[in-house]
Image (tube, rainbow, N blue to C red; front, side, top):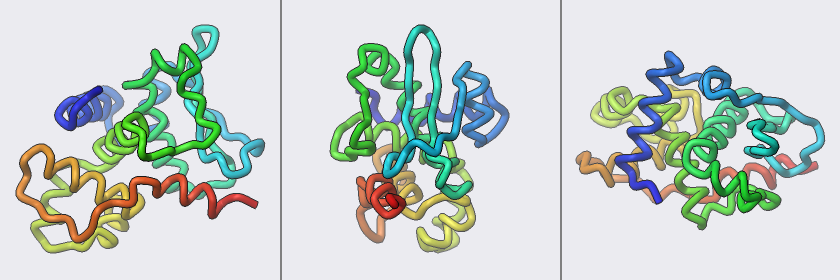
Length: 178
């Protein structure tokens, strides 16, 4: 199980390799085919590794911002949980069971990948609220809270205004269901 330091290290390495915080470019760099599908009702995304082919499937009904977040989350699964996906242990029929360590790790990876640490700390020092930071970083407020929580685990002097809702993506999926 990777710790906060390893998750940050892996996310930063992929940001450097891919030239930025674009999860679609990072997926392409890693040889992952990203596809959107209309076949999902409440499922937001899925990381698949079958027959030596890696793919991320994203719900076509999501906004661009949420699609970006879900893609980064699925990249986290590819980085840390590919062995489980290969053995079909990562079947996400009830996606984002956030109480599991794998889902938290994927969320933490997405937070580190999408939100630059220095920019996040500068925003926190300026006194921006998580909702303002979410707007600034074009991501979800809960992901900002996860980033701040992760930075606290790494020893940064921060205080959270509230705990992140670990199941925020699962709750988003339920809202999107027809």
